[in-house]
Image (cartoon, rainbow, N blue to C red; front, side, top):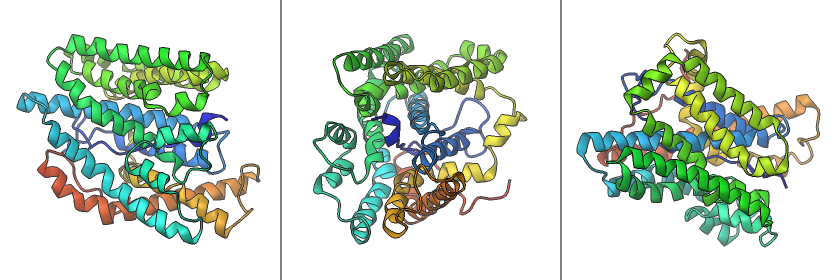
Length: 387
């Protein structure tokens, strides 16, 4: 099967960071929430009527890249301020950011879903709660497991594995930026090499799409950009060539979608997308405040959607179960364009509505506790304000 059929993303997991450029009074990087919104929309639309037209897998890669960039930026700021990495506080912040809303999903989707899709298997709960849905998904690819209850949580598992290991790696290298840079480049090369080997020895493309060791470079490219962005010479260079950076980045991203060779898609595609995002984002960090593209990313509804993206991601597949139970046969991939568009609109509305409820009931009450352990966050607006 094509791995893109099971796209999923873990958006919004990283705290909003202060950036090197264009920070507002809350330290939010301009355009970032808009990018999150675009990424989650790619994922949702690809799952609801537009799998052939919309690159949902690219949405996943965008989220991976943003996580690498933001977490590295936050840790660099912490070491600049305190001279150390408080690993315990980092792990507590990650737990408080991700686990409450995930538990909310597992409880209400798992138990409430018994009314319309049946109770999940015990292993569905265990894989989700302990962050190994990606490898549980591999078992599904090999036919050892039937349908998964929450298949999209595979990407949450990939990011959690990164969160567990990265503070340890960062602590080893942050004092020696050149070695850190070489290490991250090595990770990117090693992940690509392993994907090539995996496909050559007969592992399925779905494995190279979901396995942590095969996808870690999608996060590492973001880490690498954050590290390089600390260098003044690097920032000065891209300040002069930000248009070229964005053109190169977009060209790489578009090329990664147009090349349909199966081996490329299972191996080099993710590397090309990582490089493309690095170029495009490097340029975005340097654009002038009046830039049209930046203004579009800063439209208030898009910013709000980006801030609700984690909950929307968690809940977006639930609409598929509801529609299959209560509207059987009404919506399908081969239906008329108007019906597919209606399906996508209803699913998107459901995802962000559920994400909003999740944030207000579970995510927002955690903010004060997260701040006690060093998080730099502000409450999201209660609605999508007019821009």
